[in-house]
Length: 102
Length: 180
Image (cartoon, rainbow over all chains, first blue to last red):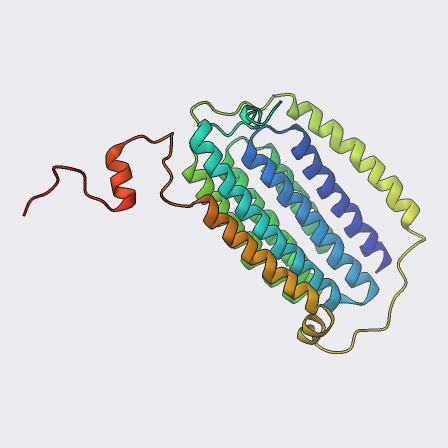
């Protein structure tokens, strides 16, 4: 049980690190959202693994479901924003979003 | 062993989703990673989280991504630098080493076991996490309203200046249209 907890947490940290790398280096706006999604996967895995290790799986599942619901709302709003921005700039490049730049 | 394979598959498909250039293949890789995560949840007896992961993340979010990719068009493809193929493995290696070192230190500090929960999942969700549920409903409504606001009809789109297209959107007939 203990080794499993460590293993799950280690892989969750890898997922979160990979997502942060994507957010820091990618220029495509859809790729940035995919990075957010990968981070959310890591967080969900960490929550459920923690609940599994501490024998409180029901509470962990309810928190994981909360994370998933918030994640869906964020992704839907962000994709709608990306579609609207794409209509104006004809591009998915995040470097072209400079209208608010001082 | 199965658990380890599932974890490796999850991380591998997540990395693929980030590194593949084609956005459609990237979204599908993300869905496959979600399926791996859902199977992991089922293996850990977290059935409800697994069902949510499959239906919402692997299903709904993938559909949203594919719809968005189909609706957007880029005149010039976004060029990601080719250095990712060298930088990312190095970054991942450093991250994995740090991860292993931290997890080794954590090995002696496993969280204390609590008494097994009493009651079903529904009781825990409705009785203990009632405030979370209210928040979730608020977030869903906020998401729906923001999407509605972003796709509000009636505003002139500077990118598509075709009069027939506007007429088709608003349902009005152009001048000199059909005579019966």
